[in-house]
Image (tube, rainbow, N blue to C red; front, side, top):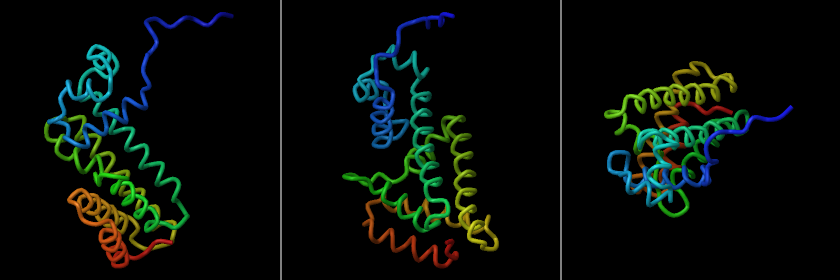
Length: 190
């Protein structure tokens, strides 16, 4: 049995690399201020390839948001039952602080603004917020804490605050201390 041949030319670019570069551009300037010319220059894609692959700037932006959300979901999975909410929070803060430039969270730094202009970004952001609340609540439920949903939503709010604090240039150690204090008030999850 022969395998049918795919039509069209195969992609001549590394999609992971394109998404990393596009993500960096959106993170730096935000959705509205990042132009197609910026994306072409940053990613190395030809304009036609960008449109053929992602449809438009919003399509490429959505692809970067999905990739970021998947990375955060993997962080949740890696931490389930292993140090709980505080360990997850410290890893998230490390991610927000970055290696060289403190960028905060891609979603809270850029998608919260883009949500006003692009309905699919607003819908995606809403879904991710629900998933984040549920992921945090799972830490508390696993630890047997009462009011797990409320505690989870509060812990998620602390995490979003930490992302904004990092983005605003607050020192990582200060943000970590803030997170630990806030989690102590909410109640730790094992």
